[in-house]
Length: 85
Image 1 (spheres, rainbow, N blue to C red):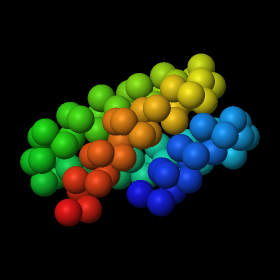
Image 2 (image 1 turned 45 degrees about the vertical axis):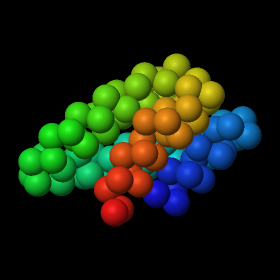
Image 3 (image 1 turned 135 degrees about the vertical axis):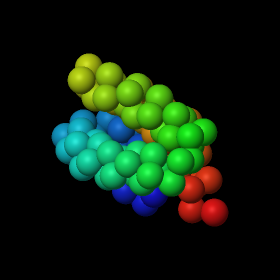
């Protein structure tokens, strides 16, 4: 969750190189998390994270830093937060 928050802050601060580099790392981590959620049959969290990751990838492809920051904040962090409970 810390790397997600760090990347979100970098994107909001318009630190493009750092944010985009960290997104590539986060996507690999999210892929593992999605697999774990699927293995555990946690469908609701799986679908929420999958939807958010799809938007993250789209924003990453467009290099939309504000879009990246917004989806990390509003879509991915809430799922990660509920996962840590």
